[in-house]
Image (tube, rainbow, N blue to C red; front, top):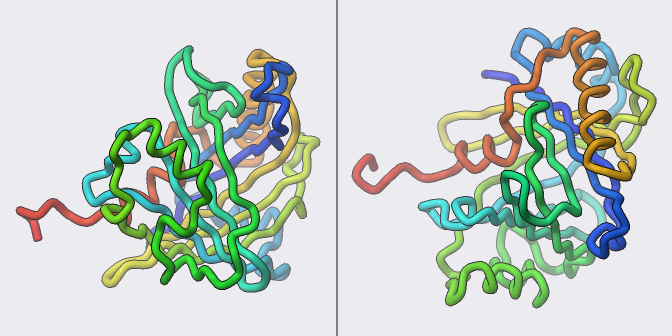
Length: 250
């Protein structure tokens, strides 16, 4: 079984970011090499502190239509309480929405914005309910605006991902913001893969401040022997893990 750890810095987004206030949600990600996973687990003694259990699914067509068009659909269901769903639009380069800046290395952030549904009805089990009922009208409109005529019945579930979450419970040496840790286990019929995601929340007033924040995080992670950024994200890993093979290879 191959282990990966993904360290992420998450900066809380507020609606005024979309209105041009100049503040951004910043997300900084680091995929830690196999050899450094034990270092991360020892640093925070995670086995001694159980986290919150959550089931996660992504959604796309078998051929990756949503991902190709910069759309990410995700639903989560905690072991206790209501679930939530999110639709995210993600772009690259210097243009596009900048309510969120997602760093996977120090070269250039991905630009994105999200529409969340934080109160998915309790009777909608994410692994059984029709996909379009997991997303509210605003979320569905966002998808259909970018993909006119999109057929929701073409989507398939990418999962399950069994997650354990430690929300803002740890610290990274030489980095001041609190750290959240998520362990993801991806499971299919014949294989399994683990991802460890470490995150922290803050607000950055500008793109330049966001870049400096990312640099501070990467510097602290390297000093803690947790590796260098690879440019890869957990979402891409999950979608590729669960994507069915082409018809001619089945």
